[in-house]
Amino acid sequence: MQTKKWALQDAKNKFSEVVNAAGAGDPQIVTRRGVPAAVVLSMEEFAKYQKFSKIQQPSFTEYLLNIPTGDGEIDRLNIEPRNIL
Image (cartoon, rainbow, N blue to C red):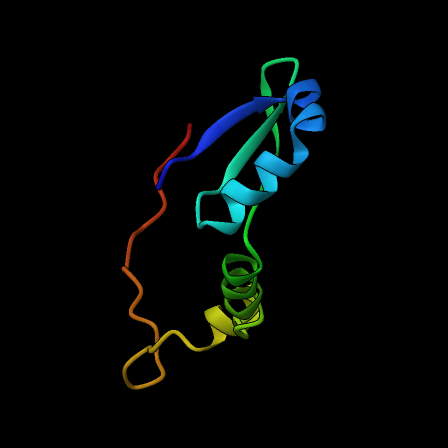
């Protein structure tokens, strides 16, 4: 892929070129004051990202509740507290 960075003003002036390059499968990065601000993608690439983002991910709570614990009991260390006097 031939990803190119465009300053915002250049991207505005040559928007057709930016869109044509993105349509050819080359994501185009648009910067504002030298900092990446946006990416122009082809519809095909965008659809891939959309499909990926819709995959159901478990919540953090669901993740923790699904951690296998073996027989259901948690092994704890039998440690005596230290004397703090």
